Structures are given as structure tokens and as C-alpha cells.
Image 1: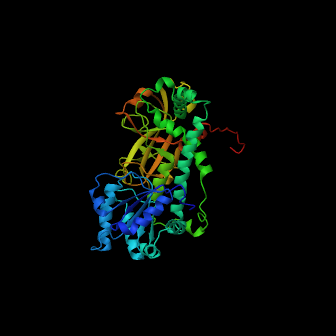
Image 2: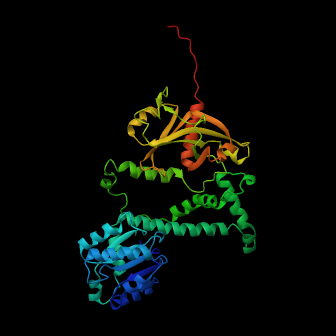
Image 3: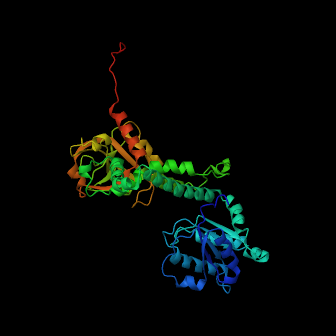
Length: 435
């Protein structure tokens, strides 16, 4: 095995005929794969999810008296109970030789509204072929051959393996910082504390009540990223077919897909603290009298009233602002309870709106993005003319400013750079003899 090496550590066999899978279980256990068999009757008695099994061997016809579509419905019902929504990564071997049954199963098992974790892959194999041979000695190799044709799944299997291996190496490297176990026990927590504090630069005397453990996890990501890239094995056929590079989606679906990807890359919704104003925090402006509250937009004169203009008064929107205090001031306690803020707005994404947000006044690069509570992809704008210094106590008051998001490092750095460029613009007046 190449792709599946170190991925398959456990297996679950769901089959109504124990005698037909006894040799399979024996073979898997010889490969050091922990395996357990359940009949449909035993599965039906389960009341809670199983622990993760990396591979599920599944007989499509759990009930021979029913049609395939009925059996698929039964399987989905079972999966809701035994897999649930936090099962982890796994793959399915579906015992069937019929392509139409395989396609029918995949269509149902990958439905977005399923109340269970979707598999990384579904591979069909013919159990009768192994029964004819009298053994399952080639089953993992057969799976490997088919899986290599599923390039995307192969990538995520390799990625999953490298994440596990990378995280193990990260832990090992941290432990190796100490000469002996006594020093490790005495100083490891102190070191982890400093890593957590260092991530956002939050001053120690202001860290009380802030969830440092989440920041500790984030602080270890740089090390983990290095370890993952070192451990990753390239998938042979990934990025070799130029025809697959183009995303030929319906034009209505593209913004939705890209908005979700952009949000994953640029926006953070975890470990938000109303009590701790941190550079990069994004707030909803609840106070309509705030000087940061945007009422008009426009390329130069900002003469379009958002609440009365026919094109915008019914558009779903939210006034926001971002904390842009330089991180060095924040971490060195130079902030002095004052936050530097830029006002903005996000509203339903419309490509035709771009003309109103061009020029040096606006940060207008954040679109389309998905924001929770809004059905449509959003365009996020920050207006550099709406720059203010606020007392931190105002930002802590959720009746005035309620935290909703945090800009990830790449986005925050870009906003700061564009804002610095805006404020540092220079010009010179020249006397022209023509006038």
C-alpha cells in the first residue's frame, strides 16, 4: 500500500452474512488493522456514534428483500446514528458490481443535508469475486488501484496523514527543548503560555478572561505547517490535467463557492472577545450616531444615501468597523486604552457596485465573502475617511459595538498596508507658467 499506508488503522464491516466476511476480517487483522463486524440488527440497536473507523466495508443489500433505493435509505438512517456529525475522516468500500447502484448510493450519501459526516471516498468492489477466490488477500491493493484514480480523495488522504505525522513531530520538537523530564514538567506550561501570549501580542496584565488556549493552538500552526509540508507525499496525477483547472460552474453558484473559500482564508470567527479589543477585531456598529456609521456611498462625493436610494434601501447590509491599532503598540502596552478604528460596511455582493468603491478612499478588495447571518455573498468595504480613535470602553460596550469577526493575519496586514499608503500620500504644488 502507498496511499493507504498509515491511513487505514481501523475498519468497520457492516454485513448481514458473517460467514462471507470472516476471511476479510482475518486478512485485515493480519495487516494490523483493528476490525469489528456488525450485522444490520446490531447496528439498529446502536444509540450513539462509533469511534472513528478509517474504512467501512458496507454491503449495499443489508436487506435482500428490499430494493437498492430502500437499502440506501436504511443505510443513511443508520449513519445518522453510528457516524453522526463529528466522526472524522473515513472511506467506504461498497460491495456492488453495478455502476447504477454505485452512482445511486453516491448521490444520496453525499447530499449536503445529510446528518452525518460525509466519507472522503466511496469505492465499489465486487464481493463475489473474492468469495470465488476464497480469500481477500488482494482487497487493499484493489482499493489502492481504484483510489489512485480519485485524485482529490488521494490528496486529502495524504494531507490527513501528513497532518497527523506533522502534529506528532511538533509535539516531539517541543518536548526536545528540555534536557530531561524534570525540566519538561517544570517549564513546559510556562513556555506554552508565552507562545499563546505572543500570538496576538496581548499584554500579560490584560489577558485575564481571554481564551489563551485557542491562541496557543493558532501559534503552533506555523510550526505544524512546516512539519506537514515535510511529511506530505505528492499525489502522482494531481495538477497534471489542464482541463481540470477551469471551474466550469453555473455563474450563480461561483460567487457562493468563492465566498466560502475567501472566508476560510481571511476571516476568523473563533475566540472572539468583546472584553478584549485586539487589532483585527471587526465590530458591528450598533450606535447610529457614531461618526463611523456610514450613511452614504459614492466614488468621490459619497452622495448615494444607503437608506433612501432605490437601489440600496432594500439591500441587506450592516455597518462595521475594524480595530487597526498597530500590533506593536498593542503588545507593548502603548495603546493607552485607545483604539484606532476604521469604519466600513458589508452588503450583498453585486459586481456592478464596484464603481462606487474605487479610488484611494476605500479598501474594496474583500469580496465575495460569506458572513454568517447573510444568505448572499457579501462585499466588505472599509472607508479610510472614517478613521477615528475610540476609547476601549466604547468597544467593550456591545450596545454600541458588537464583535462579529476577526481579520486573519494576511487580511489585516493588507488593510494596514493600504491604509498606510492612503495616509502617506504626498504631493507638491508646482507653479505652471501656462496659467
